[in-house]
Length: 327
Image 1: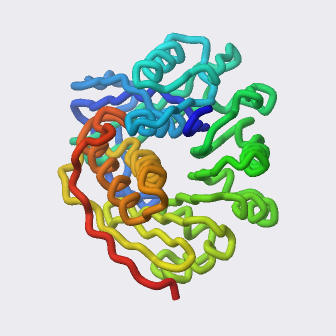
Image 2: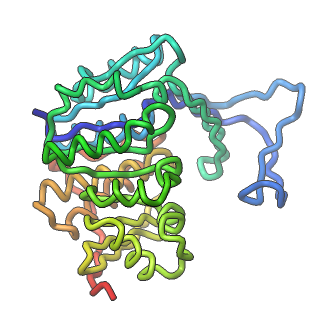
């Protein structure tokens, strides 16, 4: 019996910092800015780092470091990156007995192009992780107190409702951090799924997408989400902090003021830190928020998604949490 099993992607992150490229302002880019590299030229890179990522493995490492008996259920390629992922998880105390390998696709890869560790563009290859299908999941071995579902894609997304139903029928608590593909399911299907979720974690954009309410009308967003999901609802706002609703009270906290080195994995670090705090403190949302914010801040101080993560009983700065009524 595991304390928690995570599902999601396993990714090899490659961090590149070119010596020179130009950032231009252009309305045709989604963010209004773009990176320009000289076509046909060799671009010198002044730094390169190979680190692991992916929502499924990032959160698994957090849970293991927080002292929980943890397993990751996912798929990697039958390649060197996949083998290194398995070794790293085992080294961090995460059980890999539920993992699968495939020769159909290589392990997921991301190439992170960064500029002074502030601006970045990420090239993403969705490979082996998306190949995990219902038949690949060792259902008799899925025995845990909690399931954590990171964003799912490909064939794994097709197992979404089956995983939730399995947990529901077996009295396993469910923490869900859905991706856009999951949130785009037919409304009736999504409502049926979310009604069985214990903790729903969304970023601000996802919360607006789910509720169909503008981001500046936060209480309305939570009223809508609370109607859809009876469990605890979390909305992260990046550097602006976090809001949490339990259906009765609304909790609000700002982010800690730190020097950010890299934002990769910060959302996963908060989500898994929050769930860790919720479990350890027997449902205390204030302390769950404090651990989540601290863990995310620790992640932001280091390059990659796993280097800075907090260990169990490690001291950390506690953010102030405001508590008010849900109106």
